[in-house]
Image 1 (cartoon, rainbow, N blue to C red):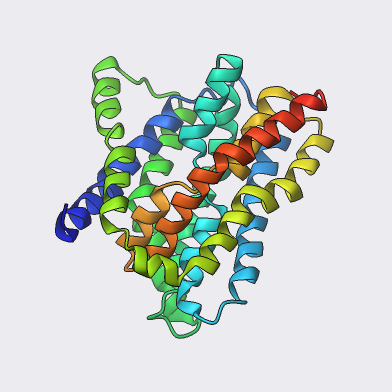
Image 2 (cartoon, rainbow, N blue to C red):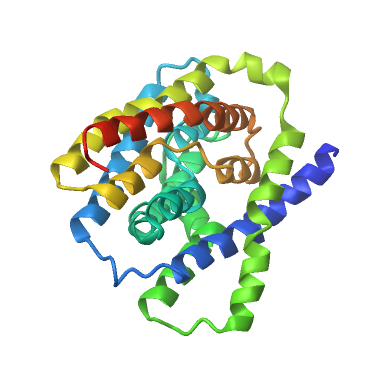
Length: 285
């Protein structure tokens, strides 16, 4: 697969696949049945603080052009895919995942557009023009439009007819495999070795640090069982492939992002198992 085809796949996933997938996840989430405002606020503020922590850490790297990719890859999780699968397998339903989706996913995407716009190597400082460009990017971003439409659709309880379900399901199913194919075709081992330090740092933040910092807070709030597992998936699951899709679509090379996606996907098999074993031992799940 050459780079030209990989770029076209990436563009399709960014403009069609991911927006439709997020719309589907939100429309099919029953917010009203499992609503828990304190938990939703925890998801929002822990994500926001994760963005600021990653931003502070990124300033330690000499190459400031990596800042946008590093921040996004450090905080953004596979909650819509892995989180729902976790909950379905352990508890038989993914109701708690819908709370994380409404609390964190909109912020995931707004923060990503803002960070990638303001931290671009082409951007010299933050001024009115930069903020205007970032705001325009947020308003016109296809992924954010998919999230907004899905939230409005779900909150207004607009009917979701079967023929629409089938169409949306078929299109949304293309997002992850095509995104992974584009990521794999674009991956460059030589460039990846050149950015291994920020990739490893982002991986440690993603799989260990954020979980260790924020999960004790939600445990103290009384979260147990499915909500605790949902919070774990939000904080400690692998970096989502949509990070790479968005980074490439906004003019970044994507090497740091793809490296972090690969590292977090591999090592999460061990870290998530360890966290789940710890919670089970403590009687929290």
